[in-house]
Length: 243
Ligand code: DC
Image 1 (tube, helix red, strand yellow):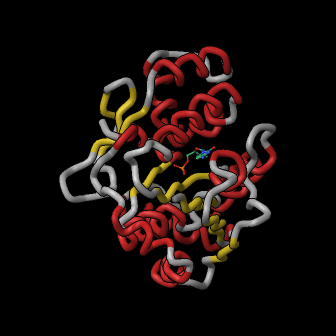
Image 2 (image 1 turned 30 degrees about the horizontal axis):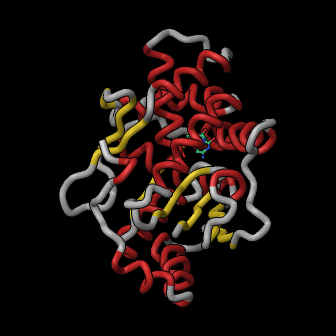
């Protein structure tokens, strides 16, 4: 069974998706981490970021894998072609280039086929899958679809507070401008633009806590009986996602 959680950067969807996976005891797939891993590999190899063919080949030839620690259903590490990139995918260089890399149809095709293989592996159990196009493109047949969003101003406020905590530059206006630019780019790109699936439940988190959002999602799943059906799913059997 699949819960698709899509939404823009800063909407809180990652935190929500991780918390839901923990509460339900389901696996978690961060598809943004996959595009980030491809970006890191492309930068390291000095590939031109406007060369969709070369980047598509790289994505097909260098599968992304996730590493787990005993007893935790959430992955602890990310690797591409066996090379650990857990820290590298969160750097400013990855941030600055991932939109361009992930906009290529060839990259998306190769990433999407890896995502489908990981989350539908026979031994994989149930997955919370987080991204931008999970409910629309990757798993249009997902049993549950949520689109988590928040106003650009609230997302900029959250990002600026997060940056301040990490000692990173946190100018609110600059962050707000960057968020607006990224939204425009992601939602108007030719391939798999960011948008809510017609049958997704849209949750605006502007005035909600992470716990409230997660409770709504977990409630919806539990009310449907799916969580109970899933109780026997093997956790920790990482299937295709295992490193
Ligand atoms: O969620 P994130 O910020 O880690 O995502 C990084 C980038 O990857 C972001 O620019 C959008 C892109 N992405 C995508 O195009 N499709 C996905 N399913 C996930 C992420």
